[in-house]
Image 1 (cartoon, helix red, strand yellow):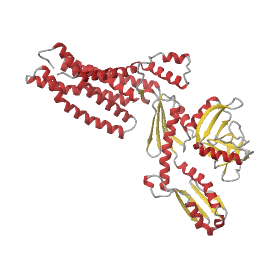
Image 2: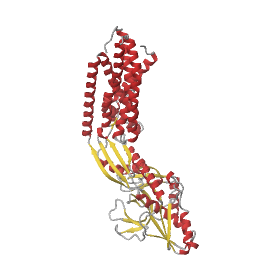
Image 3: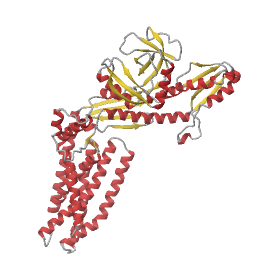
Image 4: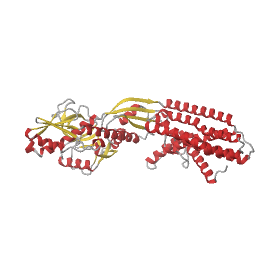
Length: 555
């Protein structure tokens, strides 16, 4: 019954590392303040306030400072269920297609005559040609604008459906392209919501797709659901549009179906008529930062990608002396007159901003424009007090479970039950250490998984101890009985825990939210339980046996 020295050192090194990495969770508030202050100082390029320096001093820098992140139900925070209006993207795609279709048809004016856009339902483009005899040519030209669908299910299909009736061409997205657009819209919406929440510095948000067009958003530590909505609820759609003229009120005649009347920011009663089709869109932005204009007022600097810079530069070069509108979420925030060719793809947005508004606008623009509007179907705020109640209840449950299991083990197995109890405490520390290292999030179901692990952790010890009893009954010596007990119980222990691990993995990959939190702690608990039951308790028994050298043992 002698474990090699290298193996003993490795086992106790793992135990020591687990206790070390679990230790910060025993001083949660102090370590959390230390981590927040350290992150803020790094973000400020090393500049620190006296309060931040005091917070940094709360925990030694040479000790691990990783913490188990607390989920929404333990920390409090905001819960939103949003529906993405994917159908709105169809209309945008068709609107963007009109200038290209118009220019292509004008190049074949001898065959199709003049072209004009007609009013049509959202998501459809109707084009009237003055020469119906050239309809076949016109349809051929428009179909040439289509692209192949880039999804596996849409291979070989066109992105556009083109039909003709009389002198009118009707264009809309094909069913395959709509499905592909829906997938792209949902993926883009998820990523942009994640960026915006990450920009705000929140901890471990849960952002998941639910069903075909819904997004579940849970952010621990944020004040209210309204605060979360203000951060992600706006589309922040920035466009640069040509200005047609001014209007006296919001209901004024724009002069064309392709124009729209929008209000000016900070100027009540002032309205501009602008073209619907933008020169450049916010999707071409690569950076936006809060700044100040030449008068010292808050503003936002922006920079385009090469494609956006080229389009913006060409437009300004060809329209010197004309005004253009910077439109954010259907509101004109600025309408400067083009004084010269603006090359380089950068500029500044000015308006009646406060410093906070310019900073928030920069965050929204930098994280990207949501491709479609979000409708919030469900919103809920969980207070920190309720979260603390959940933590307290979970702590009480864990303590009661550990005390009850420990008392039963000691009553049944005496000193060997004490060894199992010590291993159980180490097991709990290892679970928290692993969660801290991987940055896992602990939820209320996760606490349930830990409590369940407490009961499961001693199962392996029971199997081992019962095998040792059987060997003692057939007159085996103490050392040989202990060695055989561990060897013959190992296969049963591994088989039992392997089946539970498979269940935990299925729950993790197939479940969502609370179910995954339960699965994570259960899976970690299985691994640490096997380690402590088969290796740590054996080391404790070996140390005791080498010290006392008993002739007989009672298990």
